[in-house]
Length: 223
Image (tube, rainbow, N blue to C red):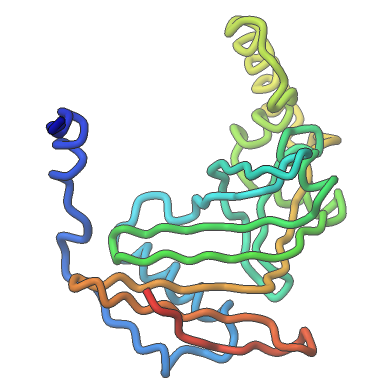
């Protein structure tokens, strides 16, 4: 029996990828460590008009060993690693407490680039998490003060009341504490940089820690 494509399949197959001029990437000229390349690619994504380049996929391991993923915001990327934040009481917070490993994924369609980072995760001191939170917007503080992340919500009205109270407190107390708010740092074991190519000859450059754990090995991967 012959089947015909569904309307969804037709719509899906009609979409195009990278209908733009893609930048060149010479992996031989890449730096010895992944962080400088990440900084350079991030700046290039911003310059190319990539919407929300600071958002990323965060993958964790569930309590029963399965995968879980969501989109979060990058807070920093420095010599310690890639920074993101959440409540320790949230689903991802509980998962990281049980198994402190994660993977990050950035996709910047404006240049046909993606970056994958995998490693161990540690929690920064609470004072650092608060300093990071207080340096952001009133809305960020209000969201942290609402709490209850990942808990079952009875009605939307409950959220509206809690949010309004949190906004009032954030305006009145810009240095307010959010006890469960935590800044996490992913120390990379691997970082892969992918540059798309219109003829599907994509460039994949992977950095991985060497046996000493101090340096990096660089290697190309088949696309």
